[in-house]
Length: 161
Image (cartoon, rainbow, N blue to C red; front, side, top):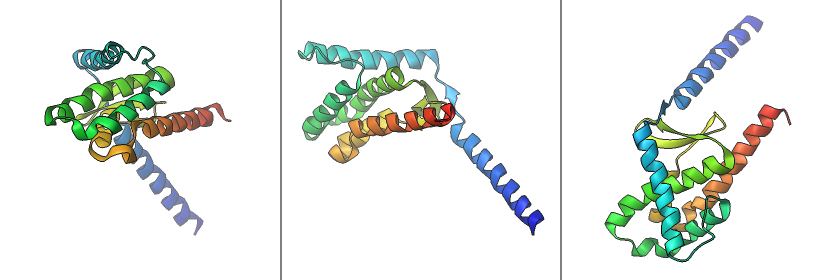
């Protein structure tokens, strides 16, 4: 009985590690793409400054502000804006996550994601698209807060606290 249990445990551990390796298999983002992502984020900040929102920067308060803008404006966006803004605003959201929580941009399949704490992938461009499509129910601010909580919990686990 103990041998069978040990075999099952080894199998499950091996399967879990393979699944985790598949999930976390990602590629580095080419420098040309990374440069475009960073330019999209900078463009978001400069556009907000041009609109007179001088406090807009790479921080949580600005993510909350942008989430409110998306909720207020999403029904009035053109089809082109709905196609372009998730990339630009998602780049900004990802850069805030990296700035505030750590991490880096990675390519996961055919998407760009932020790898936080070496074990959590989040997809800011997808989340912006979802909020534009679905409204406040898919808030980028709630996404940011949950990502921060996960990053903090992962960090606490690594620290042993």
